Length: 65
Image 1 (tube, rainbow, N blue to C red):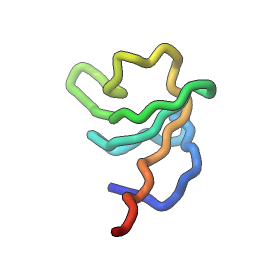
Image 2: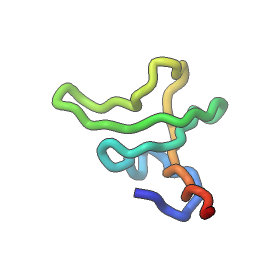
Image 3: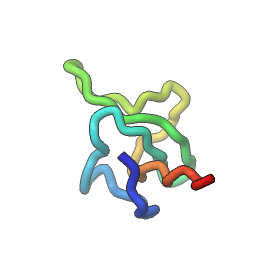
Image 4: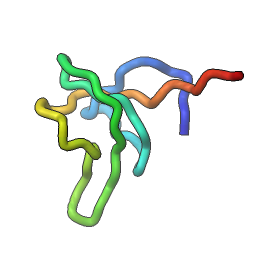
């Protein structure tokens, strides 16, 4: 699901949809990853992250050829 909005969304306000590709930040670093819900909890789908994810945004629409 792609959205046109390119504004950061606080994880306190709303979380992404299950298995959604997103861009995340800890306020310092920015990384593309995915969000998933599992029986054991949630995952941001990255082992490279070092900070606490505070905000996210959907990926932008791909360019039109």
